[in-house]
Image (cartoon, rainbow, N blue to C red):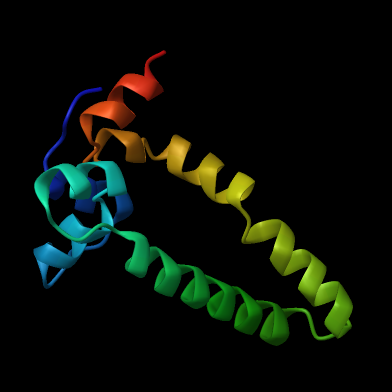
Length: 110
């Protein structure tokens, strides 16, 4: 795993953070946080999941007026799910930017 600077990460996602500490926290896996005695990304992940669900819900509501509530729920669930998000993270090479603990780094390469 090669480690890349946060500036390159910002270029990859086409967004510049006003507070770089939030970005560092968002990229900090629990394994790394436990080793260093710092906060992990878990709380931000919880918040991010809710925001992603809201934004996709609003998009579906505004752009697919003929879909019924149950249909919108199914579409949203297929888009905002672990598999879809994993594909996007893989495509953008997010793993190059994560702060991982020793145990997690070893597990990813076995």
